[in-house]
Each structure stands twice: as C-alpha cells, then as structure tokens.
Length: 132
Ligand code: SF4
Ligand code: SF4
Image (cartoon, rainbow, N blue to C red; front, side, top):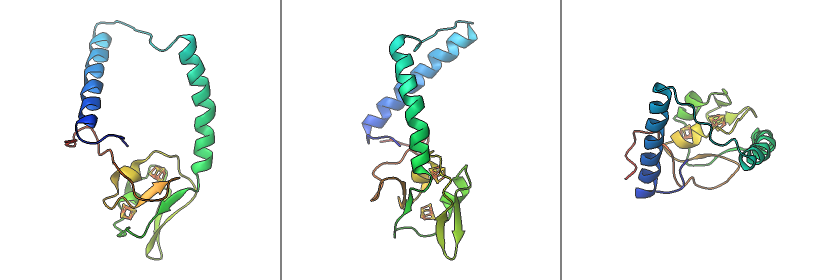
C-alpha cells in the first residue's frame, strides 16, 4: 500500500524503476555493490528482524471485514496463505494471516483490513496501474 496519491506515487515508482535498471546493468556487467552492510544497516536489520515476527504473530487473527463487503471473493482467491474463506454467505478468516496486504490492496470495496478498523485510504494495484 502506498501512502501518497497522484504524483507522489508516480515519483516513487519512477525512482524504483531507475534503481532497478541500475541494478540490472550492474548484474549484467558483473559488478557487485554491497549497500546496506554498515553498522547502522545491521542494527536496523536486527530491530526489524525482531519486530516483524512479533507483528506477524499479532496479525494472525486481526483481519477485519466491514459491511461494505459484497462477497465477491476476490480476497479469497488472492490470499497466499489460504487464510480467507467464503462460509455461510460471508468471508471468514482462519487466523493464519501473514500481513502481505494482498487482499487489502485488491478489494474493490476497500472492505478488508488487517489491524486497523475503518476504510482503507489508498491501495497499491501493481506497477502498471495509472497512479495519476
Ligand atoms: S475482496 Fe473485498 S468485497 Fe470482495 S469478498 Fe473480499 S472483502 Fe468482500
Ligand atoms: S493480508 Fe495477506 S495473508 Fe493476510 S488475509 Fe490478506 S491476503 Fe491473506
């Protein structure tokens, strides 16, 4: 999910594409650049490494589906964990969420969230959607 709308997202996508091209060129030319191997990066990695499993554990049963859900079942089909199911005319979760945000970004009604109640503001549809 991107936090900016309009030109904000376009700028991030353009920067990412430039970086990817640069990485591809380096790989093609046999250049190995080790970025992020300094002490600060390692420290950040350690913090992230301890925080993410805790986040995932807490998210297991924090999927919320609000009344805007039309039961289209798109979320069921995109969930890589098979966490979502259509049962008794509603979408239910099986407490197996890994916080990938796929369902949140795909839901046409912005009806499904993890952790946060309320309406989803922005969705990331993939690299080829028109951000403007
Ligand atoms: S994708 Fe959204 S609207 Fe469709 S079933 Fe899932 S939560 Fe409901
Ligand atoms: S966030 Fe990912 S793992 Fe969790 S319910 Fe949605 S699609 Fe499944």
